[in-house]
Image 1 (cartoon, helix red, strand yellow):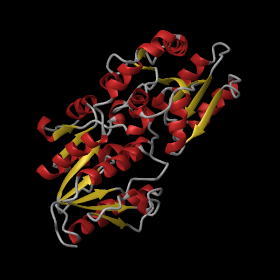
Image 2: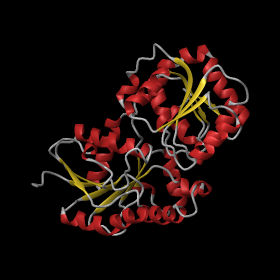
Image 3: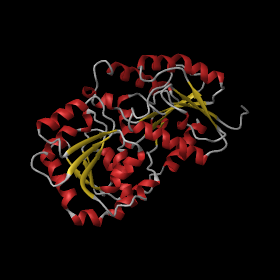
Image 4: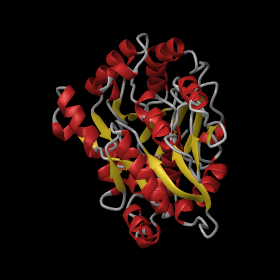
Amino acid sequence: MARIGVRIGINALYLIPGGVGGTEIYLRELLAALAELDQTNEYLVFTNLETQSDLVPKQANFHWKPQAVHARFRPARILWEQIVLPFEAARYGLDVLFNPGFTAPLFSPCRQVTVFHDLQHKRHPEYFRWFDLPFWRLMLWAAAHRSRRLIAVSEATRSDLLRFYSIRKDRIAVIHHGVGPAFAQLDRSHTESYLLCVSTLHPHKNLPRLIRAYGRKKRDFQLILTGLRGFHAQAIERLIEELHLQESVRITGWVPREKLYSLYARARAFVYPSTFEGFGMPVLEALAAGIPVACSDIPPLREVAGDTALYFDPLNEDAIEAGLERVMSDRQLQERMTQERRDRAQPFTWERSAAQTLKVLCDI
């Protein structure tokens, strides 16, 4: 391959299609936007055995480099990332290695840029399984200190990086996620009687409180939970059965993008009760679609939604119930702020994210 610019490696070894939630959407959208933006620099995308070539843009300066490792077996993936990937980086003469999924090789022959989507393992270690927590503590600390630059997806995440790690502020760039134009183009002329929550079924997403608040009385609308099942799924399913809500609370699991667009298009309103976020991509998607949003009053979601969402205390079931009732029934709220919500989401584009990311990758 002839060198035509900066040679950038993309460490996609972490990606399990349909198995890592929002970080998959982030990487797919970012790569597509980089391909639209950049025909000069060279990209080598290192994937695992679960990930196919559809991740890699069909453009001459993008190259698929599949690796013989399964990401689902985490110990093997970590060893490959730490031992084999640096040799691959040297073999292909990389100028920079971009790590979009938290972790990075301890020893790299080139400079590294690593993305931190959040520091949940530091803020809420109680949400992690005991055998996962040591991995997160060691690998993220190492990535933070071995990378030349870090990308935080929000000001809240940058604050956490400065709080928990001894890192200079100028090493961290805040680059927000984007939202695809398809959300703003959705036809919402025929909404249905359901409240949508797009969320991984993990403990910090606070879904049990949402379900209990919803189940306090008989509702004239459904609650639809869609997203990666996660390791808290069985507990949530048991709660739905205990409250006899099987007919009114529906769990879809991970769905293809076209199905997700359809769910957003027909939802009367959107709710997001999470107690912790690094960014809050589903809230941004709902705003872009013009959907009334009720969500947790936490800094990352304030950073995304500003004054266009209805906020509630995520630890208070009374407040959650009041929020979901108002967002579903207040016609004035639903209609008055539609354009304001779309205007709020408009600056959050993947093109801007890609341009800011490319600047970091090329300037280190």
